[in-house]
Amino acid sequence: MENRKKLIIFDLDGTLYKLKGGSFKRSGIYKEVLKNTEQYIIDKLNKTKREAKLILKKIIKEYDESISIGLEEKFKIDRYAYFNATWNISAQKYIKINLGLRTKLLKIKNNFDLALVSDAPRVWIKNVLKELKIENIFTDNNIFSGEGNIRKEFGNAFNKIIKVLNIKPEYCIAIGDQEETDIIPAKKIGIKTILINRRNKTGVADYVIKDISELKKLLDIII
Ligand SMILES: [Mg+2]
Image (tube, rainbow, N blue to C red; front, side, top):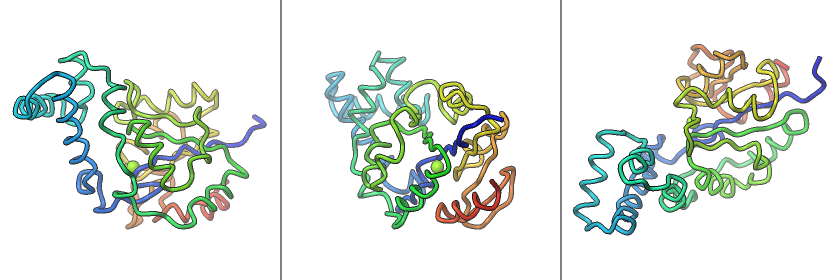
């Protein structure tokens, strides 16, 4: 038997906190990122506001939410520079503070290693963790962000995590609020999964809890 702590892999948005407005798109974050992107295109590519709007519209049509990839392929814009310029937005405006989260995570950290995986860029993740006052709960090496070509939406993020952290899937537990990206790809490679769902919806996840505040209790029972 491996003599190491089990690893809990947390999703961020919708899992460690709730968005005001309920979802990413309705929260206003997406709108602010689009506004920043428009300005970024104006500055970086020397375009008028009208031209920038048109470019952005075309990119969204072709690349959907993967704007960074579109800008990179069409205009050779470095995606990290793009993310840092457009996603460095205030988390305070958009997230509901979860009182007691820090204390609960610290308790869980006594018995588990913790990692964080999000398809959001690192600059946003850092702003959120700071706002939630949990920025030192996750070490930098245990934060997996989504700027590159390894993302939950591409189905390859969990493989990367177990490789990088050199841990077997059976020693991992993934927790998230999206079945498609947080649960199915983790389960596929043998990771135990916990879905956060307000209505206790049952699906493919091994366990379901209503809220992150119920996690400690569940872990006490199942581990
Ligand atoms: Mg989420």
